[in-house]
Length: 560
Picture (cartoon, rainbow, N blue to C red):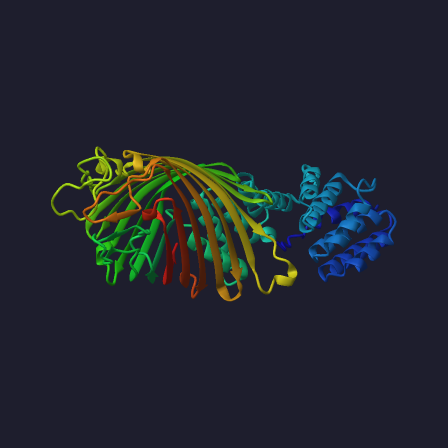
């Protein structure tokens, strides 16, 4: 972190004066002259010269080495400083306070050499001995902050700022602000950042603190918006079932899929409404929709509203409960009401990325009716009852309206892990950051109709890459196996006015999803992106056997 806060010379001067008698005024004057000259060397960064000047005087060798070590710490020469200080550990000609100073500055040097455990041990040895209480508090706070212990770091850093502001500021207040923010003490974090701005408004610390102050709202919020145009080659997700006119006609009534362009949009927003200790909670909402060019009967609107409560169990682990309610329309007709309850836990490992585990319950209430298909009038192969019918006729006694009722409850859980990959130096100019991820999800859906009862297993993998010039590339692939618990009520072929026969096999589906998106930041809040999505749903029932391709371009906004 490059913190330079080392001006602790008073104790050394006092001991140097104590170490000499005043029997001979000429000798005293010589020592005082040497000390003054050595301190001048230190101020000028001439550490070796300062050490040599005092080391020539009997009884000052260890004190000279301490002065040289402090000087080299001040100059950022941490390996050299540590070598000096290690040579005088336990020296018998040092006072207790100087012994504490040796350990204090060893701790500082070790911190900057990223030997944090050793640094912490050295600072513990300095406790109660050194006169550098401000430096001790500062580096204890920095080590606690690095370890994610914000609750310990913040008071220690505040103490450093209070004990010796001329020596530790604005550094101490800046990191105190980070620690308070990490502890969810936003009011205290804002106060600390404001102190930094007051002390260093035009400097690097003040400018960074001003940015952090803007993002440390008492009621933090976010708004994300996206709008774009997509081409979809299978808007209705129709499979391979066809209906044909009887008596040998080849006239096709229903074919696979329908293609169309559409405009799409999405807004996601949230605001934190309370934060107390390790607890916080807020409100979320979203609205997504589409407007097709030709197939306007498939225009959709889907607003949601929800709330969450989170608890930080420890510096690396957070638990969150979430509820969401959504209401969808298709072509202005009520289509779906959905509710979600989710409980999740996330844990950040020191060097192994982030793991997220969730359990959820979903309630679906589809608002459109499912109709019964006319039954045939006799044993197979028929016939259908007299009169016109838009489709074939089904088995006797089968109530398709009930069996195809998709209302129900889904229960599931998921485990996902994301891991940042170290970028080799040779690829540093091509990839700035790489994150890979993978996960598994299980779901059991209990529908009111037997058609949709199933268990599902979903495996997923993802990769995100930060590229130069503010480009980002992300991709995700998943495979889902759906094992339905009953035979399907949908035929593979229908002839208008004639009975059809159902398969006796239980329905099975294998779904593959692939998404690739590239995004370019235009400003901190604005970006453009392009996305390609592919879906292949392989089913042993032709009506559910289909593929889909979507390609689109979007304009994205984010405000926080």
